[in-house]
Length: 92
Image (cartoon, rainbow, N blue to C red; front, side, top):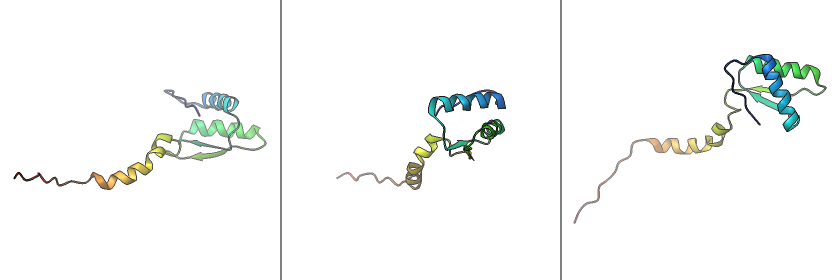
């Protein structure tokens, strides 16, 4: 899905964004948003007009696909970040 970058987020702007997104991508079952009050207010307003409401999940990191993508890699490489001992080869 798309994203919106603005200096200030307000309810009418967020609502227009979600309406446009639903038009282009179809109606979602759930939406994961950050802790923005404007996004929550806009989705609540949209849900008031709908027969089947959209589930809203507010979580700071769940909507960041990049963080989720390399989460397993970070878990594997973190133990390898400790100090290492390098032994120089002995000359004959």
